[in-house]
Image 1: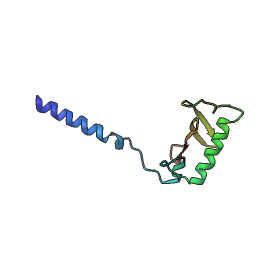
Image 2: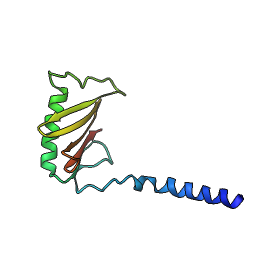
Image 3: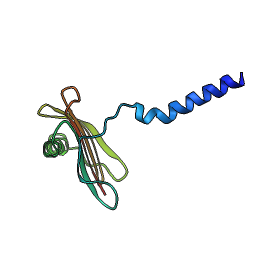
Image 4: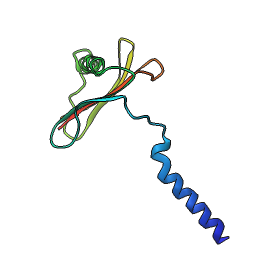
Length: 120
């Protein structure tokens, strides 16, 4: 019985350690911009598209999400405005806060996609 319990514990431990890799997340094709480290950051991770296209779509999504039509992006420190927005054929999940921005966008069946993050 003790061996069975030890085996189950070992299997559970291996599963817990392997779960971040088991999520199926593929490394980005490219990372462009200033990555987090010292101070401010502003970078794009892209899969199946270019950094230029990603920044262009992210900029349009931010204007549409925060612009006069939706009037979001007024969250106080420590909170965020979140929501979904569509730009052309791209669907973006936005998270905008005080000195923080994230746009996770994809096109079609998640084939071309990107994540744009900024902050201080």
